[in-house]
Image 1 (spheres, rainbow, N blue to C red):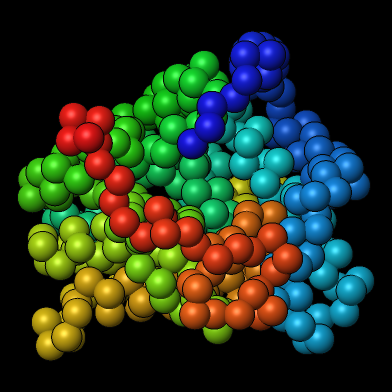
Image 2: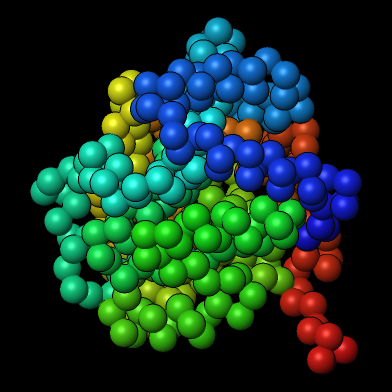
Length: 324
């Protein structure tokens, strides 16, 4: 990943510190109004992201939705994403008290999350994937999450501290497998985001996602197979008053009869998230270039304009410096 140039590192860091200085002191109503304003501005002025999102919506829904319906959906998506960013900061002030008031747990669907056993909690860039981890850890649950580094290292450090404020353990992506395996064998929970472009050289496998092949990390399924931990789809979405509700949308387990249990489970995990996104699409981050990497055997005509065929170097694991 190419790091941020120096002339962007410090302004972004300064803006984040400035936000931390005043956002946590705003009342909840002001946070909601600000998120809606930021969402409208984001939709209006982020031309490239809006174009990517509209292409994604066209791919998934085609003529099922009109242009007006897609634009309305996308505005709501921008507003939800703005609320997520603001809430990462807002919940840093009195986090336990605020999460107790503003995060609800749907019963009995979420009862399974509080069993004393290793679990893999599956989510995506959907709703507020950040707050659900913080709220779960605030209840005393031993939660691990893997953090891909942000391009801005100064901002990355601050976000790591905020994510860990309620007791969540953030594990750096590099060399995470051994720590995650050890944690699961000790009965801890692991939260994973599955809807990211993971190159085959990094453990990705191509599976169907809305009738198109996308690369998905096989690591969560491999951990589930090795530890026999259940995979639980967990979602966290807000209502118009800014109250989040956490729900469980199903539990998946390893199929010991499958020819390739890791790939088979990865496919089922992806289909689980696909169903959720299709049912309530306004909560998913449509701006993400989810169909960016395409197998060479596939025609780019069936993918968004930002898609490209995967390079040879993406298919194989690159040697570490010590191996080169």
